Length: 522
Image 1 (tube, rainbow, N blue to C red):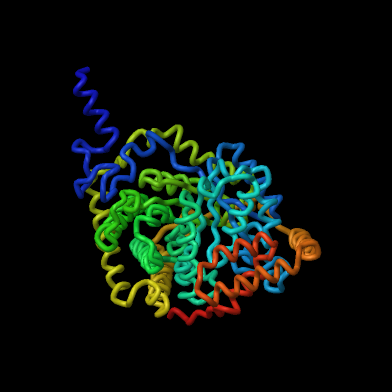
Image 2: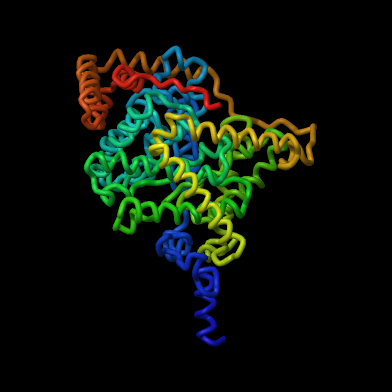
């Protein structure tokens, strides 16, 4: 074969189309990064396989973490229980019946130390899905790493910390929007100066989409939140390129295969333009939208649960073809309960098959130049810009959230989708198409109340042994920092080191910031 022919075939494999460019003329690794943020993408490095895990007590979750790492998982992702997400200790009356049920129960540094026992934090990346109480859990993580001998400057990972999506979709908020935004900005500012390789926020479209948003709304509201976090941090006096390279994103991989691939491409293009044109970023790293993806939990069905394996595989493939940097694949039993170890392993194997057996990692953006995908990319970009324009006209995303705008739009989209499912216009196998009433029950993971009793006992023991005077001094300093407007992270770190509990620290902030109550969206 003519060497020139071999060269052209290699070029085509790398870049996907004969002329090597997308509809906007860009190539992989070039602004606006429609085709990917790296020139060779997975040819050089696979995405991080990061299965979401957490349940029961810290020691139980620690065993699950180590099991998944032994099976080839390449990063950790922590699920916390509802009391932890809402800033309550496991022995609080509001925690009753919820301890360890939807994630791991963490009330103090002692719990976090047990969660990561025998896991060297300086050698692995960790993602923590926590928002309202994120600053406190992140502080616990940093102290555990510190006590393991790891340097903060070398730590890699992500803390979700995206409070605006809580008001829009997930509803796990504590404080009012503007006070909550202050905590996010404190984290970003602290990270820029102390943990330069750690992502202090993962701006999340996932929960927005799971609540019923369309792909275009997921894009617009996620990137709109990103704009708000940038503006809030710039007000601190930081330069854009000091912190923008560590902003990360989190998207849903839903069921419309080509739309999802186009959505990821459009997201990179829009964010690059935002950073260049609105914020005048110069560092190429600031222009690159880096994102984690999770397959669509809302698409999973109780009916015929084995079909969820097929859904997850196709959604994961869309994420890979869209250029994700990190991926979680849902387990087949997650419509019932937290995944069993067997189901979690099968979900991980799904990623490993895509990576090792399909050949899709041997090319970059294979749909680049496709009329259909390029058109979808353009359409989603246009819809995203239109919606961002509406948000700007309201005074930005914080003001839009306070007015209830994105909440109402998501609710309308969710209602419309449900009507289409019920009418049969949208087909869901096992639900309104190819249904089978004889679905066999499957084994599920059960978290009983023994977890709660153990956690309550641990807290009682902790409070009896710690230095109460040191705790009260540290909590008072958190209160002073909250009232005085200084960055809260140093005070929170000292409170954590003194073994003040999550609930105690959050209560101090509740007394200073107040508690948010949402008005109806419709």
